Amino acid sequence: MFRIKTVTQVLENLSMRGSIECESFILSDFALLCAVPLRDGCDLLDTVRQRLRAQSPD
Image (cartoon, rainbow, N blue to C red; front, side, top):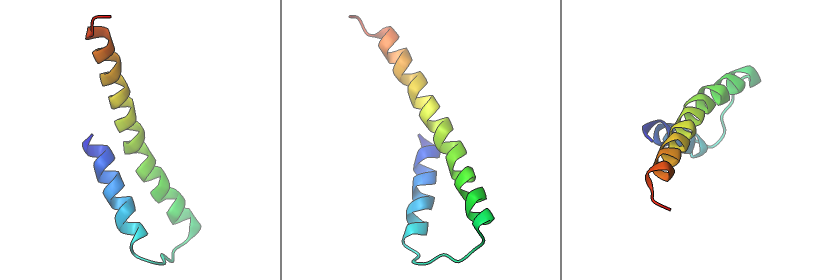
């Protein structure tokens, strides 16, 4: 959960800066940098969901 919150805060801070001028490859690298922890966080949440489903009586 921490990873998702951290990346979300970074993206929100960038969106409030107005215009960001930099090379497209820098933006591409930054997008990849943000995608990795978001993917990890989502994978973690999926694992937690599966474990909770396995524990709940149907």
